Image (cartoon, rainbow, N blue to C red; front, top):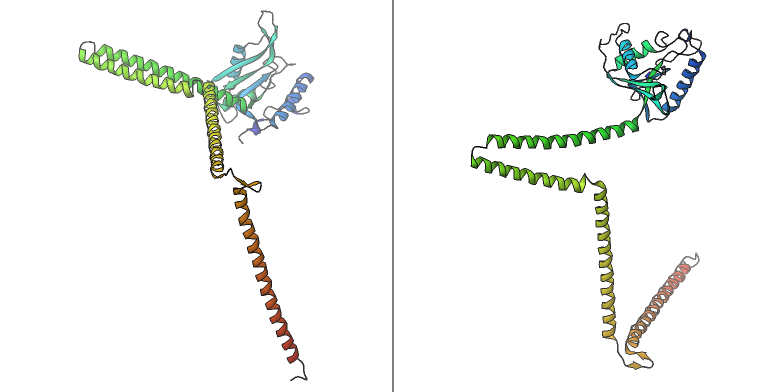
Length: 327
């Protein structure tokens, strides 16, 4: 189960059960509402249940991140029946959601009475959930903690991963530059005594500078300035299209000029009977074609008539022979 849907009902308390004894009506309404919201979100395949991150509700207004972290670490280190967890659970992140408009007595942003806790291991998160959820000894009896596994949006996680990879790549590039500078300093300190060694170091420095310049140019054309590369590509494509259009127009003009030149070379200025000599020459092959077609039609009709006569003569002979008294 890639979406971890089996953890969606972990920590669920239904009304009328033993776990619901002593739960106030407000807390039960909050639990029912949260369960409905979770079911609606899980209909979308982009949401999944986190194995490590918990959502904690019904927090007191004066509860801080340090207090929440200490409480979660305390209850996560407890045993869970047969399976036991490590004594020092590690918490990656603790966050209490606060409002941007309202402030508390100290002037800090006021808490919205819910937050998130992220563990490194699933066992610790599960232990914390089962020990803290609906525990009347943590906050108050009327407002017990509502703890459940939080939902993650896969799309947001992918965006965060991309940002992390980009920041790591930038950090590695800076580290490589620093390492190269340190290597150069070491080489210069080793070879200060001799002049020949100093020349060698200078040559190495020049080579490294050339390599850096080439890399910077490549990055500026491809990675560092993606907008610039897109605009350059568009301009290149537009130029190619314009060139193709120009070439096509020139070829058409050349063909047209060649036709005009051929017409002018073969044309005659003299006219006979109101028409050019070329016009009369063009009519001659048409007459010949018509005459040849008429001759072919006459020859075909003659062949058809010949076969008709032969067929009729043969049919008459057969009819005479087929009579019984002519035998």
